[in-house]
Length: 133
Image (tube, rainbow, N blue to C red):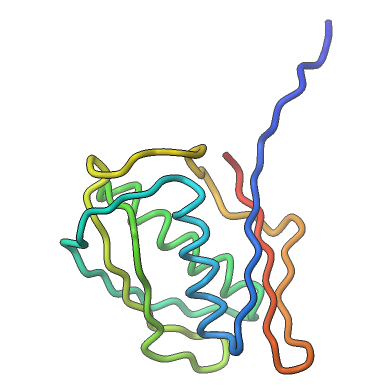
């Protein structure tokens, strides 16, 4: 028997002046890591996520966008945070059909807590998230 090397995850990092913008940047980075498109968005989606902590919120909201993208065969190209109250968020996303996306990276299967970093230092928010691919 032998073990085979396998790269099972990929990650993204982002910085922003506030937590809502950091969440937007992480969501954009997640979808940009999978593919790109020049098509105009044709579908608008709103999600509401309630979580216990900010770390849970990051994982939960990215997981929700990933689930919607998979089940509706969409690729999100922009996001906006309507409201953020503690660790509860209401977000909008604009998407194109997956058929109009040039896949340039691996498909993401799940958002993980492995190596998750979310925090503020010196007035700047920083986040790092890893995904199972």
